[in-house]
Image 1 (cartoon, one colour):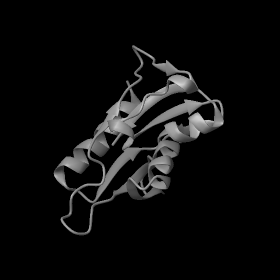
Image 2: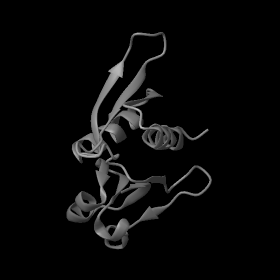
Image 3: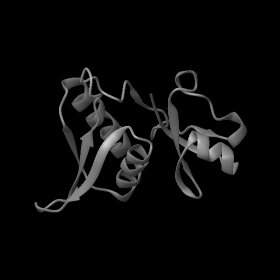
Length: 130
C-alpha cells in the first residue's frame, strides 16, 4: 500500500541485520530517493537490476571501516498515505539536532532539507534519516 514505507523498512531491516544489500521493487520515486541517499553518502551505491521478469533496485548499504557500524543510524517515514505532511521552507525541522536530514518531494524533484531551505522550496516530507 505504501511503496516509500516499504523502501524505508527494507533499508532499516537490512541495516539492522548487517546485510550488504537491500533489494526493493523498482519505481521512479524509489530510484530518485535512493540516488539522494547515495549523493548524501548514506549508501554505497544503487543499481537497477533487470535480470528477472520484474525489475528491482539493489541498494548497497554503507558501513564504517573501523568497527563495521552502519552509516544509517535511523530512518523513519514521515508523510504517509493516511496523513500527508507538508512544510514550508521556513518551517522545515532539523533532524537529530542538525546531524540528520529530511528528504522532501518538491516541485523541483526530491531534495534534502538543506537544499530545499537554500532554494526556498517547501514540499511533502517523505522521510527523516540520521
